[in-house]
Image 1 (cartoon, rainbow, N blue to C red):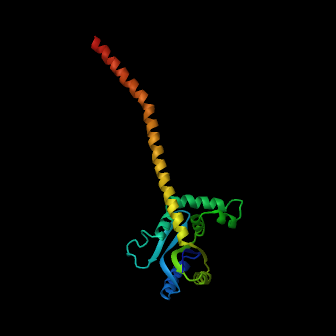
Image 2: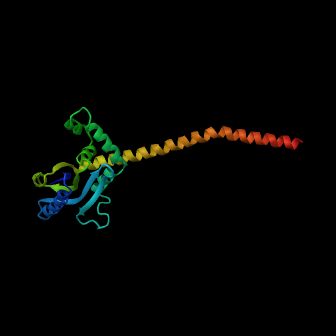
Image 3: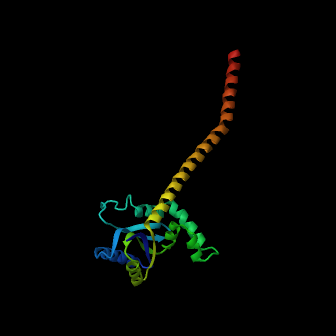
Amino acid sequence: MQENVVILTFAEESKAYQALSELKAAAAQTRLKLVNAVVIDRDAATGFRARDGFSDGAPAEGPLIGTLLGSLIGIFGGPLGVLLGGASGALLGSAVSSSQAVDRASLIDQMLSAVPVGSTAVVATVGEFADEVLDGLAAKLGGVVLRRPAAAVMAEVESLREAEDAAAREARRVLREQRKDEWSAKYESWKDEVQDKWEALKLKLKK
């Protein structure tokens, strides 16, 4: 059994919910293993939004917390998703062909590109015996499928989190340096201010 992260994307919102329902049914029939899944949509104004989800036994409150899928959706909806999504759009709109662009993009880039603005998708972690189950489901509902190995997606998510942490540390360092520069520029004026006041006081004391 191959564990994959899959994205089934649809132009019609209702088809995504139907796909989630059929995924659950396929799992109940042991045609695949459904670890967790979430319906997301994407629009130009708000970006990605999680709409409905499923988890195989996690607590009802926040079932995706601490999971690969939860981390992935967090990236989609967070600043990294905005940054990567913009970069993917620029790449896909450039002179290279779409297929070349996707080949060059990271896994996260590919996944972001798989959910274009205006579409609704099911993002799921699944164990698959064969591709035919999900491929057939998507074809029947008029959707498209992107699948990537869960281990490869996890490795990239961890790398992105490390990069995000490193960027945050660097940003804090730069801010500290800027504050130092800002204060150092004021030190001279403060020194002059104190010197002028003390000189004036000394003159008064001599009188």
